[in-house]
Length: 258
Ligand code: CO8
Image (cartoon, rainbow, N blue to C red; front, side, top):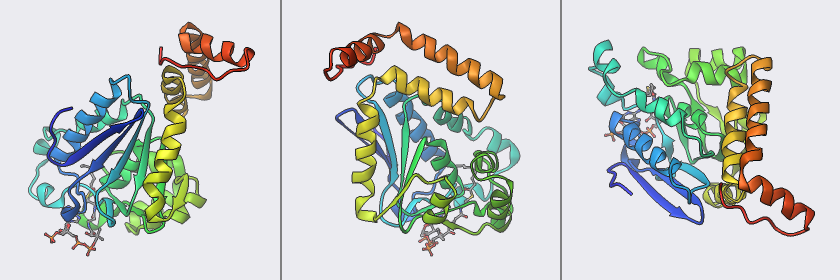
């Protein structure tokens, strides 16, 4: 595993945990942080021993308080264009299931990072928001689009037009947060969920993720076609044969990720 300055990567039992590690700056997402994150996630995505990735923030205060405002303050459109925003596309393309374990503020790019994940578990003190309007910009890593798809127009409008943060419980009630737990239980609960996902046949998990994500990008007709092709494709895997044989033989399957 490569050396990183602002993130920590741990791997155990098919689960990788990636921690944004800049707690003094509330894990603010400088370009280097996002670039390191994209590189680490890509490496883990290509590692057959990893079946699920947990993404969290160091400290008890923040998952990530957004893009690094001090770094952005003097940027121009051209320097932003050349500044490495494609790292977000690399994060979007990760096929391995991603769990966000949101341990505090998830603001701006931090909220958008959680929205790149497939499951969001949050601690009771977590607060999500898109406060960019207060510093003269708008969400730039997918917030307006992904929030609108998850929460609908009106709730999203209120978040991006007022910038006010929203509690984890409120977002759980609205379907954006899967589980709200005590801070001390956050990583143990995320790991329990990750264990269940990592124990599944890996190709099926990846294609399940890809198929669900297609629902946000295609018409129903196209999405159904996409799902069906992925369903048929899984009949080419050894794990499909093993899974069905194990069911018939009344034993536990031994999946190989192939
Ligand atoms: N960028 C840089 N530094 C930050 C950031 C940030 N986003 N957030 C906090 N910090 C720093 C503070 O400057 C402070 O440093 P210092 O001690 O040197 O002054 C330290 O972290 C602790 O922060 P506070 O003292 O402010 O802590 P409080 O408990 O008083 O407040 C808040 C916590 C409410 C989270 C507050 O820090 C805050 O409002 N932060 C900014 C939140 C924000 O506006 N985020 C949106 C940024 S814009 C954005 O995300 C655009 C996304 C575009 C795409 C993504 C590209 C990466």
